[in-house]
Image (cartoon, rainbow, N blue to C red; front, side):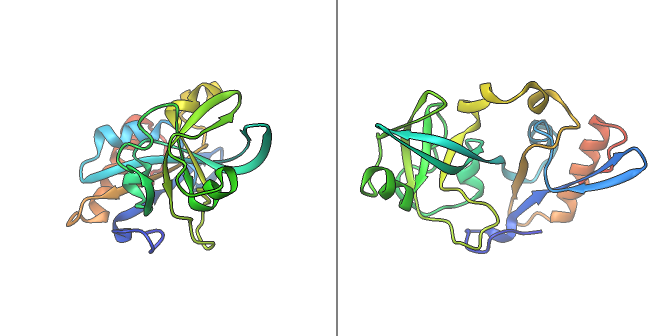
Length: 205
């Protein structure tokens, strides 16, 4: 299904879900294995961008203050899939560096007193991140909150091993943006074929 009509090309954006066999039960889940991303990226054609999204709650330090905030961990391509209007910075490269972080307008004002927070620092888990872009706030009716976006490349060391290596673990949401003039049904067929080839016994997406 398509998601979030406020985004450009929303009709090309899909979330991959999984049908899993567990004993005698078949489970439908929106969350997918961490390893689905590289598989789909390698094996499936017709995809413009792909990104994982992992919502969390973290303690953020700004100077001598601490805030508990909703955050997301995402791949560097997140802003390619979801076209947030950018207030400051370059969306194309905003999550490229492991020490970068993207914040929304209201978070920028809350933390730094204004919307131009490029180059400002915040600390999570004793690691310093630098604001590389400020984006507009997500609408309240969104199905995920993306007020602070950390690159997966910068926080991957904190993932348990089962998240990054276990093919049956369901820990992230995976989104794809397909190319224009490509049929979603054809991409779905390719996804199912890739999954069944890599992990025999899995039902598919």
